Image 1 (cartoon, helix red, strand yellow):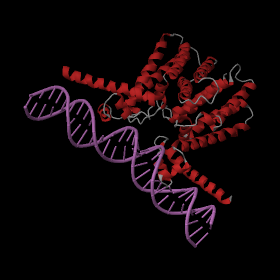
Image 2: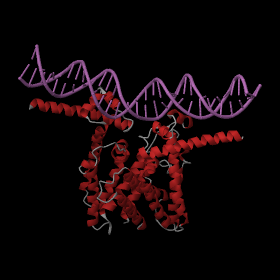
Image 3: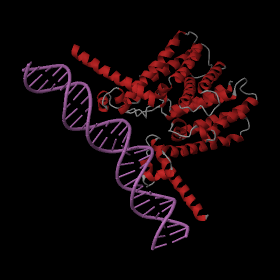
Image 4: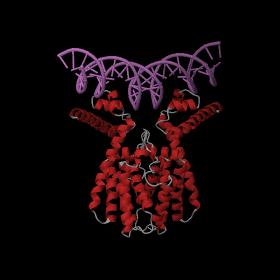
Length: 203
Length: 203
DNA sequence: TTGGTTTCCGAACAGTGTTCGGTTATCTTT
DNA sequence: AAAGATAACCGAACACTGTTCGGAAACCAA
């Protein structure tokens, strides 16, 4: 099975070659503006060759989508060492905002852009996005068990927290923060995150 | 000047005719998928005729963008009657979420889609979006003057509140709420809004 | 009626995602 | 090693997009 294995490996290598080129173009141009022809040129292959390895543009997108979530999940998983759940939660908020600030383009791809994904509800449950969320909910639950957030529903609170973080990040990524003040976008969003944390502390 | 006036009026009528067709197509298909040719067909004109009244696709978008904000601003302005500023703020949160739920497509156009707007910072200050925001900030300021939200910066808090509302609405509009629970999206977002209000009350 | 604008349309340009037929190159079997 | 089968790749094409341009109508002033 050595030959078949090598073949499979080569096919996998070609896929990652395409994905590397695609990542460059996607993050540079955004989802809509990035074209298959651009990606093909980036890796010096013909456009139609890409279709030998990916069914459609959306499939390439999905892979990068997952990659982004793996990146984020990795950064939040580090915080598992923090034993106080509320401290961990606060740190996670910071990590999330930091991720959005420093990976603007990835954030766009992960949370804002919506390509025509065919198989939606199917593997939604197993996706990285779902895992990330579940991780947040579990931390909030820990907080509640530790006596924090009295009389509040864990899922509701998780949704509200994540929404808040996402809202700030989304406004940041789309440069919609200029209407606020003369502060820099980075400053504004970090102050916003701090305000959210303050609110959570007072609960 | 009667003839020139009539001419001007006719031109204006043609613009609104286009805008009406465009609204239909934009809200049905979304910004990217809506094409000039579709809009042209909707109103039985040739695609190039549209370019006689609008410089580009983005300009048509901008008009609808403004229209959406006028709609939202109208709904929040009604609440000026509520004299208690904190009650007014809470009601505004509800109105905002309700607007997002019942005007999903408009919300998309107003807050999420970003077309290639050429003249950005220019009239940003005068736009409806800016007005809506200023309205929110002023209400928060009133709350602070009335003794609520001690030791908090009005702009920071406004940004955080709006971000939270926007985050929920954005997730709702992009159907990203399914990963949460088995509740309906509407239920989830309304519970989320209620949670936010509870948090504000406890401040 | 003539001449000049204003309004409109058809055709075209350059770009997009995607498909298809054919051409290489590689591997399997004889 | 030769012949056939399969895999990998590419060029051309299809149907679509936003936008531009030249010319044809329609309208209006003289």
